[in-house]
Image (cartoon, rainbow, N blue to C red; front, side, top):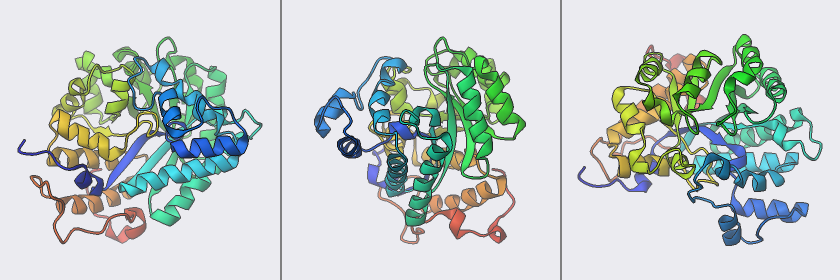
Length: 377
């Protein structure tokens, strides 16, 4: 590779973020402000102290240790106002780096400590995301999560919520939480319900446990996408099944290093997966806890793993192709984004041509059904 692309160039590219947790993507300043207003105890009262106390951006060694930061964020996310604010700010931050489409995931049951109704939780988040779309043009939808290490009954309740809000801002159902010793099959009833109601399914799998977890997510629970999937490379037959059936992988490179799922970024399997033809997407996981952005993750793939501009374009398009959106809407996105990306030469390090389209407006808003052309998404 002749030279490293500046991060600023990658920030100009239109992008998706399909795997981002609301409760892991707050601003540090917002946590402090919400805690002060709600008289909530925190492990520190200034930004630097809180960053250190939460190990933000630091290697944690395990997923369980990584998840401890959420003990802090969840303390301040127990009111409708805080949920609306943080959802808006997350979409605002994403829009600033030209994320056009985002799917925000969280588990409503974790936000009911102070008596909020589950429906109020969902509607508060949707209100924030819609306000950001009106302001910045970024389209965002919600994925509701069950939690592996909580009861299957609670997961079923979250599945019922996903079904109730289908076509009202919720586009998928996920199973998150501690993966080891908490198999997805225990939550089978929840997955049966959402699949019976034609709700999209993505599952965290192959991060803190082996390819058996991915196999179970796909063949027992019916996952359409896999969250992380770091250990898929350990089972070649399953890997080719995932490839043949275009089951997308929601890769979160920095997060995987932080949780100990991957020893170092240079050994991340995303390059192998992409070279083999798998549909890989690059995502943040948790903007706060991992201290990252989509642009930074793509830039690291470029700098550390040797992704060329052409590779980055392909991964970006895979994000739009993998979105939990109606087929014809995805076609609109893919067509429009392909045209934008073409303005960035594959070997350029200086940015787009002068004729590059303007950034920041949502293709879903700009394009009408008349502009849809046949093509595979």
